[in-house]
Image 1 (cartoon, rainbow, N blue to C red):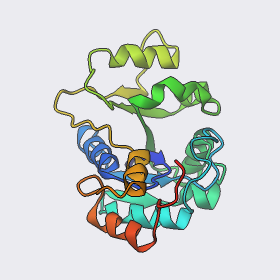
Image 2: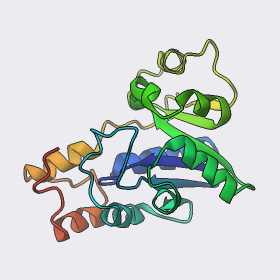
Image 3: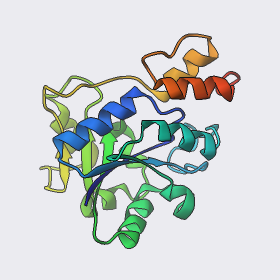
Image 4: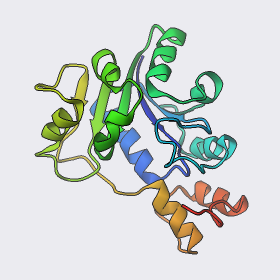
Length: 208
C-alpha cells in the first residue's frame, strides 16, 4: 500500500489535520493516511511539546477523525517513544516492508526542519510530501530548496502547490488558547473532539 504519514502531537486534533490528510489522500492517490500521534516525549521540539496532554487523551481524540482511509496510529508510543521521525520511518519499513511510506510536513515546518534529528538523511532516504500552510504557492518550491539545502527537488520529495488546495492556519495551540479563554471551538474541531475536551476538562489550566 501507499501510506502517507501525518505526524504530530494532535493536542488536540483539528479540522486542519483532517483537511491535510484528506487532500493528500486525493492528490497523491494514497491508499491510506495515518495520523502518527507522537509519544509524551518529543526530543526534536522539547520546548514546544514540553506540556502536551497524555498520549491516551490525544490518541482517543484522533480516533474521532478516523475512517477506512484515515487511520490513527500509535506506532511511536509502542516502538519509538522518543518520537524521532527518522527512527519512526526506519522502524515502519522494518515492520511493514511491503508498504511505501511518505512523511507529510507542512510548509510552516520548513524553517525548523534543520532541527530534526538527522534531517539530511530524511531528505536523502525517505519520501516527503510538503503541504502548503499558506496561499503563497509560487515561492513554495524555492522555500523547500532553501530549507532542504537543495539545488533541485529530487523525485522522493513532492511539493503540493495546486491552486485547488484548501489551506488552513488552524493550529492546536490556537484551539487550546480558545478553550482556555472560554471561546467556542465549533467548526475548528470535530464535534466529538469538542465534547471530549469538555468532558475531560482539557486545556482549562494550560499555560500554552
